[in-house]
Length: 126
Length: 126
DNA sequence: CCGAATCCACAACGATACTG
DNA sequence: CAGTATCGTTGTGGATTCGG
Picture 1 (cartoon, each protein chain N blue to C red):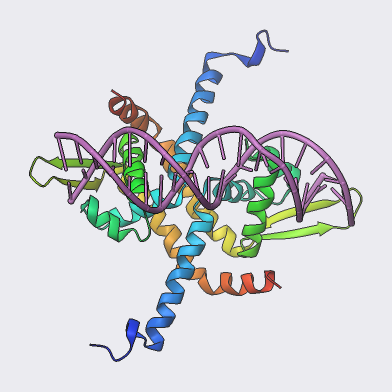
Picture 2 (tube, rainbow over the protein chains, first blue to last red):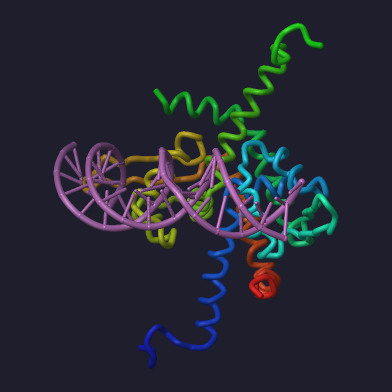
């Protein structure tokens, strides 16, 4: 038996905090739009409007929302040029680039298994 | 100028089909629950109820839904033992295992950058 | 051009109950 | 134990508008 409720040693508390933070971050980035944005930015710096057309099908709102989130988590760098009309450029940070590498892996995986998946779907749908 | 609307050569049509299929698949798997399930199954075969407690916070409904989707795409294998009470086991297929490798990468990335992200968030929230 | 806010339609989700 | 169906709520995300 432990002496305090919830096994309250400082170490365990710290581990629990790290765990919930990790879950939070994972939930942030494990979504379609975030990953597609990261993938697009892999090729270099892009403006907001360029991203908008690069990431097929994303709405204005989703793009800004996800960009804010990625900026908050330190994955993208946002550079505002004080010109008129405004010009805002987005770039992957170093951690962002590191993540992009694994996202590349996911994309490659998808391409590689297109056939397998298509036939698997046909079998299942019958 | 092309002779037909929408640049309609057979090759281009095939490429467009593959592209939209890839997008569809990517949208399927690039979500929190699917990735967490794949990650959990990496350690071996699990029963439905085991998955339920392994994947923290997932509801019965989300679990079945995502498992169906993963099965349909050929990422997990579903084995029903005709016993009473029923026993259903889920295992990653070979393509599923391949995908898990890249998901592992994402998890490792998260752990590695916890600190950077936490401080980045604090700066941003100010 | 970029961003924030509002509105609201519709999908996602959790809870519950029922079947094999 | 596992799966399906239904229902009610929540929340997501698109369209639009206005502001810098």
